[in-house]
Length: 329
Ligand code: FAD
Image (cartoon, rainbow, N blue to C red; front, side, top):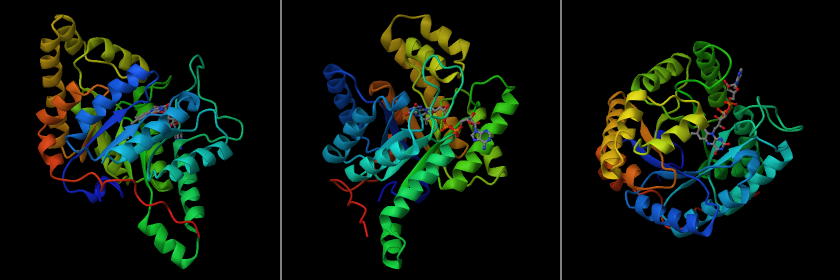
C-alpha cells in the first residue's frame, strides 16, 4: 500500500510533508497539532529530518516511532553521512529498521557549521550514493541470500529516496558546472538503488522542469517529487535562502514585506506557491513534497489550492499500525 515501493506505484500526484524533530516540550506540542492537521489530508508520507552530525539521531527516531505508532502516516527517516563511520551508520540504519521504518531519505549532509567544505568522517562515507548502497547492503544482510530470504526480502523491500537539486548545490563553480555535477550525482544515486527523488526548494517552475528533462536524458527514470515551500512568511523565506543557497525572488519577498497583515501575507504567499505547484504538476511532476517548518496552515492551503487534498483523501496512506518487521533468516 501507499509508498512502500515509491511514488511509481501510485497513479496520481503524491502529497507529502517534511517535519523536523522538536527541541522543546512546547515545540513538541505544536508539532503534534501540525501532524494531526496535516494527517487529515491523508498524505502519502511525512519525512523527518536528521540534524547535522546526527545531532537529532534520538529525536528523529522518536518522532518517526510516534508517527508509526500513533498515526496512519508512512514516515520517512532522513539519514546523513555527516560525523559517522560506516559502522555507526549501519547501527543507525538497524535501529530505524527495528522501529519498523521501511523508507529512508539518504543524504550526504552539509558540512558542520563553520566548516567551509565537506570532508568525510574518518572511516565514513563520501556521497549519498554510498549511503544508498549501504542501506541496500544492510537490507540484503537482514533478509539473507537464500531463495526464501530473497522472496521475503522482495515482500518487505525498503524504499529509498534521495535529494535532487533544480538550481544546483551552492559552490565555487559556475551554475552550469554545479548543475552538471548534481545531475551526475543523481544518476549515481539511482544506480546505487534509489527509488525516488525529492527536490530542494525552487521558485521557478522552469528550473524543476529542466532538471527532470535533463535527468531523463541521462537515463534517470525514478520519480522526482517537487519540493515546494509555502511562501507566506518572509523571515522564514530568508532563513531558507541562507540554509539552501536558493535565491528567493525579490518581487515576492518585496510583496510579502510590504504588509504586516498576516492574512494578507498568507494570501500572497499561498497564491505564489499554488501557482508554482500547478505549473510543475501541469508539467508532469509526480507529486508535491511540502516543506512545512512544522506549521500546517500554509502547507494545507498549498495542498488544497493545488487540488491535491481531495486526491489524497481518496488513497489510504497505510494500514493502521506499524508494518511487519523485516524477517531475519
Ligand atoms: P550527494 O549526492 O552526495 O552530493 C554532494 C555533493 O557531491 C554535490 O555537490 C554533488 O554534486 C557532489 N557529487 C556527488 N556525486 C558526485 C560524483 N560522482 N562526482 C562528482 N561530484 C559528485 N541535510 C541534513 O543535514 N539533514 C536533513 O535531514 C536534510 N534533508 C534534506 C532533504 C532534501 C529533500 C534535500 C534536497 C536536502 C536535505 N538536506 C539535509 C541537505 C543535504 O544534506 C545537502 O544539500 C547536502 O549538501 C547534499 O546532500 P546529497 O544527498 O545531495 O549529496
